[in-house]
Amino acid sequence: GELKPEDFDILSRLGEGAAGTVRQVLHRPSGIVMAKKSITADPDTAIQRQILRELAFLRACVSPYIVSFYGAFLDEEDTTIAICMEYCEAGSLEDIYKKCKELGAVIGEGVLGKLAIAVLKGLVYLHQQKKIHRDIKPSNILMTRSGEIKLCDFGVSGELINSLAQTFTGTKYYMAPERIQGAPYAVQSDIWSLGLTIIEVAQNRPALPPPGYSQLAIFELLDFIVHQPIEELPDDRSAELRDFVRVCLTKDPAKRPGPAMMLNHAFIQKWENTNVDLGKFVRQLYDWPE
Ligand code: ADP
Ligand code: MG
Image 1 (cartoon, rainbow, N blue to C red):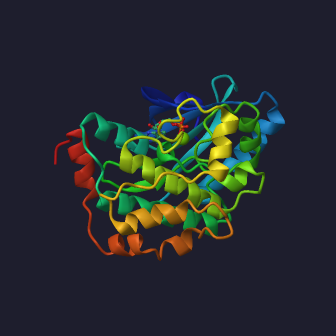
Image 2: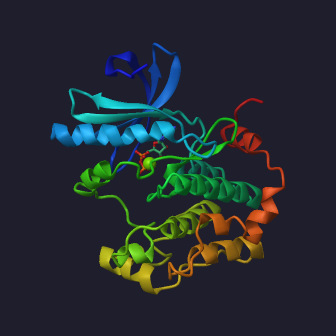
């Protein structure tokens, strides 16, 4: 059935982003625990209706690599748009690498390999649905309790993208060079962002701003992305992984492969047929019982 604002109990707060707040909620009628994202709504009711119509497309997005969607509605006296999705207990890759950092641990290549595979397959799926993600970064890649890796927060509603753009103050660290130069979004732009994401998760810190440049003004940062080489992974990582990241960070979008092509890369081939127990990785990270 339809989701209604009054049918939810708030259980906890999961996080806060530029666009809104995410809470863990209980949907009482179904007994399902969900993640509810609340985004400040444009006051124009025609725009609100358009956004909800476009978000309904998420129902048709069914893939093991995409966070499931339960529904969207106007909430909090029509001041916010609520998007209800699958609750992923292990949190985002940002939560995960920060936890690793706390523990003084480094994420191994098997986990990075499975992560790259899941993101690429998620992007291939979205591409088949004629969608581009547009916001690949560690906080938009989630892990379930059993270790499944799934994409969330992709650009499904043009109207929502417009309305967020007007208030957008978030980071532009993951933006591909061609986007900075005003080219339209293409699947290759998501691959650039994947390269930055893998560096960040592998190193327990963002790739940008580059080390030693923490005071970059926004113009300088954007100029750096367009003109300067992004750091390479250190040589204690495999040649395959280092090359994978290098290919993702090809400046020229015409020379940067899309997700389907990236699945043929040696790093992916290496991990595609190797078992990695991601459930165990998550249990050990959070000290959860078997
Ligand atoms: P951003 O992605 O820009 O950091 P969001 O508001 O999208 O901001 O998400 C903030 C945080 O909320 C994420 O980093 C993650 O920890 C948490 N989160 C978002 N969606 C879910 C979900 N479906 N399940 C569990 N945690 C989530
Ligand atoms: Mg997000």
